[in-house]
Amino acid sequence: MQFRSRALVLLSVVGMAAACGRKPATIDVSPKKVTIYGVERAQRLNARVLDKKGRPLEGRAPGWTSSDGTTAEVDAGGRVVAKKAGKATITASLENVSTEIPVEVVDVSTIEFGAPSFALVGPAGTSLPLVCKVLDSKQSPVDIKPTWSSADPKIATVSDAGVVTSVGPGTTNIVARVGDVQGAAEIRVGLQAISRLELRPATALVRVGDAQRFVVTAYGADGQAIPEVSAAFQSSNPAVASVDASGLATGHKAGAATIQVELAGAKAEASLLVN
Image (tube, rainbow, N blue to C red):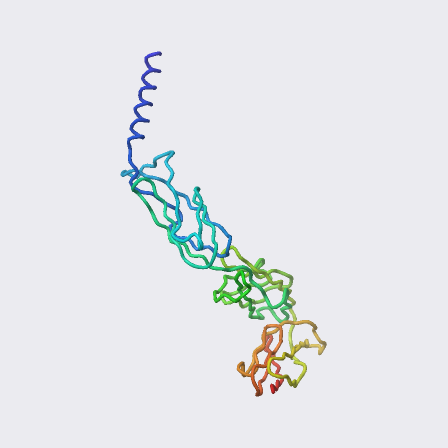
């Protein structure tokens, strides 16, 4: 029994000596490429030091450096923190072995909708395009497309372009997401036939730089008004006047534009003069 214990100890010592004698050949880092959405957000890099046979060297950890700490800084544990928009390279190194990981920082702070909630009224299958703004830490627009999802597809679905389509009555949230940053809009679905739309005022006059809100009212098959519906607005001449998803039209230069609205196949128009 004593001989067996001594043999086990000897084998253990030999194994440790062999492990200590192995040299690092590669550093395997995961993930291989990093995109961080949002300043001061972080991403952890995980590293394994391997010998020439691909076996992990336990207890061996690389050091970390950043090519541009003002864009992305990294600590001793491989945690990368985004500091500003741009690109940097994070290097993991041990002895004469190193691995580089490209890092891109995209400055995204918030995602805003024109309104916190929308009433989607019409028969099942009625669609409404949603528009949101992706803003950076300085609240300036960022030209990047979010991904879309619906909290309850049995009430409303949403396409990759942000077009919401009614399925069943109820309330759900539509989420726009860029990385870990997200914004949400509440969608209230009411299944009801729409016979016609009315847009007010029918005619409006604004100066360049001023705005006019147009209000849409839907009417059911019984002729009764359906208040507070959301519809798709557009301008016939965006260079003269643009209109947002809430019906707020802004004059840009002298001229005339037709403000158009559509919901569940019904349409209405109003005139806007800019001087």
